[in-house]
Amino acid sequence: MTRDEAEKQVKAASGTVAGSVSPKLHYLVIGDDGSPLYGQGAKGSRQTKAEELNAKGANISIISETAFLPMASGQRSTAPVSTDAVAAGCERLWQLVVAPGPADAPVGRFAREYVRRHHADIAQKLTDKPVDKGAEIPKSFLSLERVFPLFSESRKPLREFAMELASWEFARWNPGVDHLVAMADIPFMDVRRFVAKSLLAEDTPPNRPFRLDPSKLEASAVYRFCESNDEETRALGMELINRLPKLRVPEELFRLSESPYRKVRAFVIRALWTVYRDRGLTPDWKPPLPPKPTVGAKAKKDAEKAAANRGEGVPHKPEQWPAAKPTLGEFLRRILFEIPPGRPEKSRDAVEDSEPNAADPNAKKPDKVVSVKPLPARRAKLDLVEVMRDMGLADKEFGGGILPLLDEFMLSREPSERAACLVAVTRIRHKHPELKKGDA
Image 1 (spheres, rainbow, N blue to C red):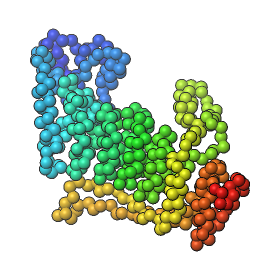
Image 2 (image 1 turned 180 degrees about the vertical axis):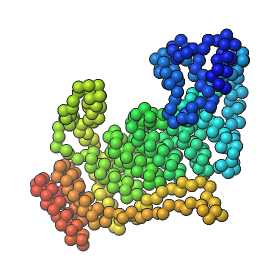
Image 3 (image 1 turned 120 degrees about the vertical axis):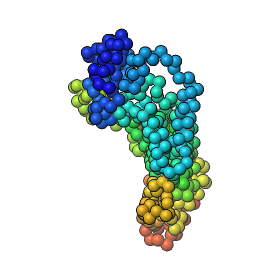
Image 4 (image 1 turned 180 degrees about the horizontal axis):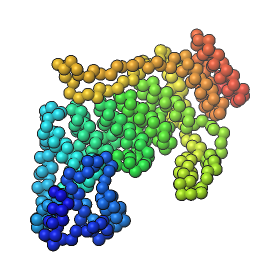
C-alpha cells in the first residue's frame, strides 16, 4: 500500500493524518515491506522519534500495515480472540516446531520462524519493528519446562532455536540448580557454553535477558558443577568458586578432595591455601584506590566503578579447620604418596553436528581428542611439600600436625624429595623449637 492510499483510508474512516510525530499521535503505521535496511539497525526517523517519545511517557502505538487495514475498514471493534483460542493456536504451532522428522523440514522451519516473528524481543531484533499488540506469543506459553527438552535435541536447528529463545528468556525463567547442572552435562558444547556464559557474563544491559546472578547460588549448588563427569562443567564450578569468595566454604572444599579428577584435587589444595594462609595484613584492610580524574560525568562514573570493584579486602580465616587433624593428615598423606599420578585428563570438544548419518560420507566427524601433558608427579610433590612447609611455619599447630608425615616422607628414594622434606622439617623445628622430634 502506498502512503497516498493509506492517507485516503484514514480520512475515509474520519481519522486525521499527522504531518509529523508528536506526543499527541495515536498510531504510527509501519509498512509491511518497510525499508530494505530493516533488521540492520536502520529504522525510519519517524519510528525512532516515536520510540523516544514513548520512553518519555507518550502512548503512541506502533503498528504494522496488516494491523492497520482492519482498523481502517471499520473492524476495530471486532471482539478479541479468546485466551483459550490463543493457547490452542500456540499449542498447535509448538507441535509443528517439535514434530519428528528432518531438521530442515519446511513445516518445522515455518513454525520456528513464526515464533521468532511473533516474539516481542526477537522480532524487534530481526525486523526493527514491534509485534502488533495481541499478536505476540504469550510469555507464559514459552516456559522453561516447554523449551528445556530442546536443549538435548540432536537436531541442531531445534537446539539453536531453544538457545535463541533462552538468550531472551533465561533470566526470566531463572532456572534452578537442577536445571543448570542438567544443562551443563548435556553432550553438546554449545549448550554447556551457554550455561557458562549465563553465569559468568558481566551485568550489562545486553546481557541482562539471559544473565543469571551467580552470587545468589548456594555453595552446595555450585559444588555440584565440580562433581560433574564433564570437564568443562567442572571448570565452570571452579571458576565460580574462584570469583566468589563466599563460595569457598572450607567443609565443602574439603569434601571435593575425594574427587577422582586431579585438576579438582589440585584446585582444592590451592583454594584451601588461599582461605587459610596468613597474608601478613591487618584484617579488613583494603587496597588503596589510585587517584583518578573525577572531572566530567564519564570520569566520575569510571571512578565510582573502580571503587565498587575494589573488593572486600583480606578474607578472614575460618575459625576452624575443614576437618579434624587425623582426616587432614590422611588427605595430605594420600596426595603425597599418590604414585603414579592420575591418568591425564583429556580436552575435547563435543560433536556439535546433529543427526549423525553413517551413510553420509560428508558427515562431520568428531573433533580430534587431544591429550594434555600432566604435571609430573615429582614436581607436584615438591610443590606440596613447600606449601605444607609454609603453612607449618605460619601456624604452629599445623606444623606440629604435619611433622610426623614429613619425617616419614624423608625415607623417599628420590633425592630431591628427601631434600625438600629435610628443609621443611628443619625450618619448622627452628621456627617452633618446642616441636621436638617425637613430641608432635
